[in-house]
Amino acid sequence: MGGAIQGKPLNLTNTVSTLAGKPDPASGADGTTTEVRFGGARAIARHGTNLYVTDNETIRKIDMTTNEVTTFAGKYGDPGYVDGTGNSARFRGLTGIATDGTNLYVTDTWNHTIRKIAIATGIVTTLAGKAGEFGNTDAKVPIGIATDSYSVYVTTGHAIKKIDMATNTVTTFAGNSDAWGTNDGTGTAARFDSPRGLTTDGTNLYVANTNNDSIRKIVIATAAVTTVAGKGGNNPGTTDGIGAEARFRKPWAITTDGINLYVSDTENGLIRKIVIATGAVTTQARIGYPEGITIDGNNLYVISSSSIRKIVIDTAAVTTFAGWDGFEHSSIDGVGTEARFLQAYGTTTDGKNLYVTDIPSHTIRKIDTATGAVTTIAGTSGSSGGADGTGTAASFNRPLAITTDGVNLYVADTSNHTIRKIVITTAAVTTLAGKNGETGSADGMGSMASFNSPSGITTDGTNLYVTDAGNYTIRKIVIATGAVTTISGKAGVMGFTDGTGAEARFYSPIGITTDGSNLYVTDDIGCVVRKIVISTSTTTTLAGKVGNYGYDDGTGGAALFASPVGITTDGTSLYVEGGGALRKILPATGEVTTLIYGNMGGGITTDGTYLYLTDSYYKTIQKIH
Image 1 (tube, rainbow, N blue to C red):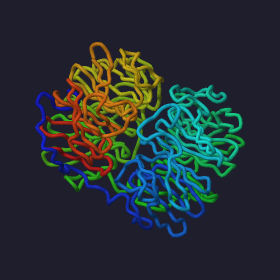
Image 2: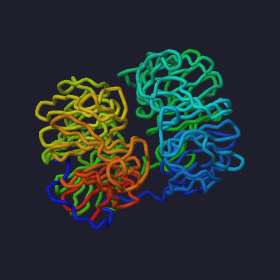
Image 3: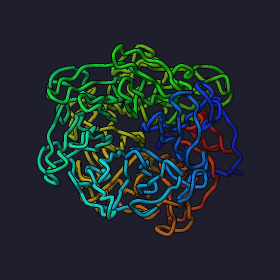
Image 4: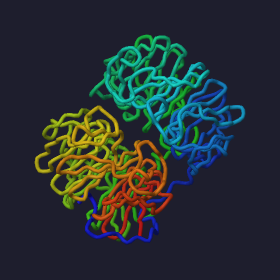
């Protein structure tokens, strides 16, 4: 039940060993070219002859003339919140970065703050927000950032916030943090859906409107919002064309030379060029899962996996500028540490084997728990798609979560927005619910239903329960018929309200498990664990305090979590992973205790004797005795 073996409380000594996989060479290493290691590079900005990269809890500096990489601020592997100079400063989950030529501005995402770094001295200060707290008046989970030297603009929720640099006053410039949509309009009358990247030419802002698969323009003087390219709603794709004829799939980052826009079309694995004057979209280059992007006039610099790639604009020639490209070295079958994972994440067990989603390789892997032997049972590494078939003839697109009823595996195929079924004995893959590549929130039978980035999945043997993260809802699927219904939350409306059915609100539901009577859901951005009574759909907050990030043990709201993600149960206790800690919760009381610090996983399951964690950071499978 719940994709784990239940009925026997675990007796753990909290001893950790590696079952399979081998860590990449140490992330965070400074050096030149391929000596360098990036562990979580997300955004990039250029100042003069240097590039600056947000990399987990650090800012890395790349000298463009020598390719030498140094750590400019923060300390790798030591997250926190401290203003200071250079390596004495602390950050937690850096994402976006921008510069006004004198300072760097970064979105310190999990501290819910905007930080300012003087380039000349490395002095770090807080520009806006309060560490560990978020709200609509400040920076709620800030992601993208840009500046026109007078103001700083930040994407947060479904809105763009404006910070006046003279007064540090924060206002909502466009959109509404808690209401998504596709509408053009002026200021708060416009609607966005999880915008990420921002750039500016000094007159306009350009926004990568990620979940709407479109690029938006905001006139800075008036806050008037229009759509430059792509078509909002359920219209992802790869088509080049003019304006609304073009298609994108989860564009993440954006930069400009003043004449053209360049976009990291992330889930398509493409770099797209948009002529600002006409809205004409063409494909510039193909790169594996591009994220952050910047320009020096002649070249683009793009974050891709563990490397910085350079693209010559005139020729589209692609080279690795700095770092090590994990896409070329991972996803290898083998025994124990001979095996390689690109990013193992979701995991489940039938008592004898673990089954793991390897996200960027688009595969489902099997691990014999007795021997550590790893094999690929479905999908082909490096080949994304939505085809049904047997074994390697089937394809997935960034599958995130997995569960089992002992006979079949069920996969949240996140970027395909579908739920897939795999017969364990034959590896035959079929699509149980949702329609490949189409987002939505419709209930219905099989392909008539629609999802938006399903991120977690569990089962009671009769039904599947799915965290439909992009819709902020919990969905139920009857396995025998494929009938999909929404049991908690309201599509398109985020929040943290307890209540029954559609009265409840979620912000970022990710992990989910069940003991047969209740569902337990992790909300990583909200830093809470929620409980849903299956028979009534009544949702309550079991543990954690909304928006308060931390590691405090305690009962209910007195406990704090740091981005809880993975969750499982042995039928007596819950085990929650996230933010580098393994926590235990007693469902009867909400009492939280910390078992282990230092795990960087995402998925977690139990076979009734051990816990197994996917350590997506070090690319290993950990066994907890």
